[in-house]
Image (cartoon, rainbow, N blue to C red; front, side):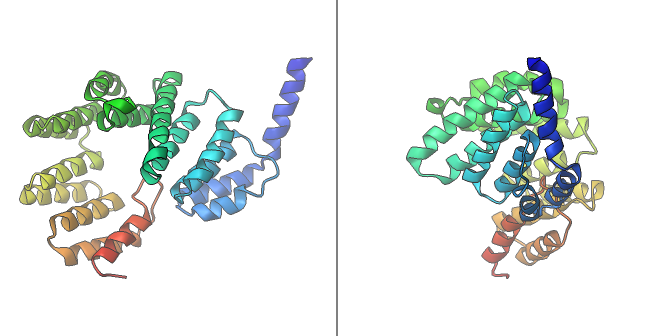
Length: 284
């Protein structure tokens, strides 16, 4: 009887969320219209875990991190063993750590690590959570639970899920240890393993630019453009590198303006970031 009652209650909650409304909101979210998605989702009288999660993601990309935290808290309360929701809650605390006062940042950073670790524990195949946990270990100081040794221990797990991503992780470790020759080898090996993944070529291009090897970086960007001529990330990454190197700034402006006219997704750098770069260049 108890199970039957629970099933009826669960079914009622799920049915209370109109599928068409959720699909419309998801479509707006994928087109980076986060406010549009929120306008549909927030008025819903009943919200299940996936609705709260989409609300949280929309708030996250609107940089409303406290509201995002509250939404993901509700998603994880409704579905406590969902690795994806817990991972997103960890990402949100990570942003709060970056944007809050030093005292608050320490607590938020620790929470980020704990949630990433829990997400990976719940689903060892959650590659995004595993990659974020690797990044945390690699960049966070020891007193916050970070450390290169911890990061290194995750590399084999990353490689099992995605061999090319494993090479990228090894490249990051080598960079951290200032072994730039070895890092370059790993970047190039990642490209060999996934030659059609434009992100792998962009990783190499940005690495070469950071090392002052601008001609080789230019060649890598040209390779990326050949692989994925319509990919907005190529435009943004190229512009960002030019600005950091303080070279070809007119070209950087052109690329950023072209980027802002692209159909972007949540996986692309935010429009706001491109607009900030344009402002630095003196462009409206």
